[in-house]
Image (cartoon, rainbow, N blue to C red; front, side):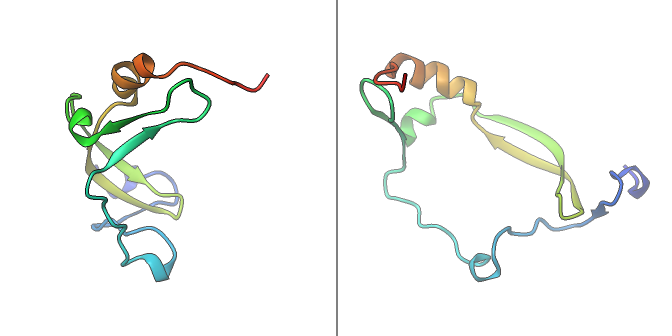
Length: 103
């Protein structure tokens, strides 16, 4: 696509900048030894999804442009991950039941 086809006010860039406050831009979060997704809150039985369970889901890739509100655009980025609907259907729906919801 040509530069003229960018949304109004956007500028094409070649890199993907790290977001955040300047003092945190070069700081990365620690990855726990055994990452889990906790499922809790107003449910009958809290649960967790470990990394191996998550990897059992199909992984999807999608290519799209990223238009930032700060007026830059990066074209053709490849995004990958798991669909929330798959996570919900496979893990959340069978494990969690509403309980103690506010009336």
